Structure formats: structure tokens, C-alpha cells
Amino acid sequence: MDNKQKDLTRCSQDRVSVFVESIITEGSGLLRELEREALDRDVPIIRPRTRGLLQLLLTIHRPARILEVGTAIGYSALAMRETAIQEGFACSITTIERDAARAQEARRNLDRAGAGEGECTISLIEGDAAQILEELEGTFDFIFLDAAKGQYIHFLPALKRLLAAGGVMVSDNVLRGGDILNSHYLVTRRNRTIHKRMREYLRALMEDPALRTVILEMEDGAAVSVKRAFVQEQDI
Ligand code: SAM
Image (cartoon, rainbow, N blue to C red; front, side, top):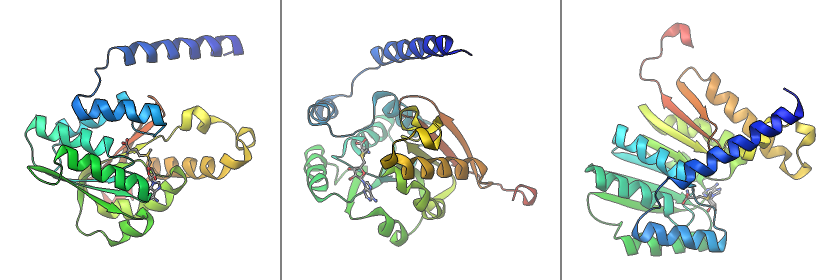
């Protein structure tokens, strides 16, 4: 494909994205308020199609225990809770945030939604996931990974241990706005480590015999992995 064809392809992909986003409905009530706040204040929250992906997977999978790494102001945790309530299944969501100011803001938003009680509760753990993941007990049926991208590869062993057999894990922003396909030398110096680690992470997900993973090219890229319940000896 020559450069002109590549530009045309990119242009039509952008138009497809604009079209798809135009037909996605906004969140409701508090979620909509948080979406606008995040936009105004540049708080990085999941984008509409990623929200849709999480909601779809939760609707199919109906997980009882959910783990989120990277709470920010609580938007995605609240979107997952809203889905559980709409779909009528009980769940507990544990979400981890290391930034004290964001954690405080998230707590306020969780309180506003009454997320500490009911059939689906959210509990926020403030601290660095690198340490907290090592301390968590039991397994989770669904994990949403949305924290510092350069750390995904370091979190992977703990996440694999915490993911129940048959459990689903979504890793967000894995294509880094398309930067991932660039050669190491074309990436700005300050982004090289993240670039290298994200490539390692994607390779680790794809090559792990205990996981089945698909990488979705929507928005900033999301990897959806399932921990296989039956791993044959020849697969290892
Ligand atoms: N999931 C949120 C949403 O969509 O509403 C957005 C999360 S935002 C993209 C990433 C968050 O992860 C930031 O608030 C950041 O402080 C937090 N974070 C980054 N690295 C972390 C770590 N090692 N442990 C805990 N939180 C971390």
C-alpha cells in the first residue's frame, strides 16, 4: 500500500469512528455528569466504545467479583455497577487508585451513587496496585486494567493469579493511539520504555497458553483475555 492509500484508509477509519461514536448513547445521570467533568478537566476516563465493551462483557459474563486497577474519579467502576444493577446480578467491585486526590474525588462520587450498599457494591483501595495486587486474596471473575501503561507487564503475574478460571480480563489503551506499531526509533525518547513494555505485554498475553486473547483496534485499543478453564498439557 502506498502512502496515499494509507492516508485514505486512515481517513475512512476516522470517519467510521466518528459515525460509530455519533450513535452511541451517553451515560445517564451521574455518569453523564462525570463524563462532562472529565472532559472539562482532562481526567482520563474510558471512552464510549470501551464503556460499551465493558457493559457488553458484563452482561454476557455476569461476574460476581470484579477488580479494577485504576479508578480515577470512579467513572468506569460506576458504569460497571450500573450495568450489574440493570442486568439484575449481584457483584462486588474492588477498585484501586494510587493518586490521593483522585481517590478522594472517587470516594465522593461513589458515595453520591450509594455504591457502598445494595446488591452491587464498590470498595476503593487507595495505594499502588504493584503492592495491593500482591496482597489481594481470592479470585475475580472480571478484571479491568486501566492504570499506568508501562506497569501492565509487571502486573501480569499477579493478575493471572487473581483471575478465576473462565474469568475475563480487559486491558485498556494497549495500542497507545497507534504508536505501538511504530518502530522503537520513531517513538519519542520519553515514551520508549512504555512502548517497549506494552509490546512485551501484548506478546505475553498472546503467547500465554493459559489465556486466550483478542486485541481490539477500537479507540486506544483494548485487549480482551479469558483465562482458559481447560489447558491441555500439549498447550504448555
Ligand atoms: N478507569 C478509570 C475510568 O475510566 O473512569 C480511568 C483510569 S485512568 C486512565 C488511570 C488511573 O490509574 C489514574 O487515576 C492513575 O492515578 C491510576 N494509576 C496509575 N498507576 C497506578 C498504580 N500503579 N496503582 C494504582 N493506580 C494507578
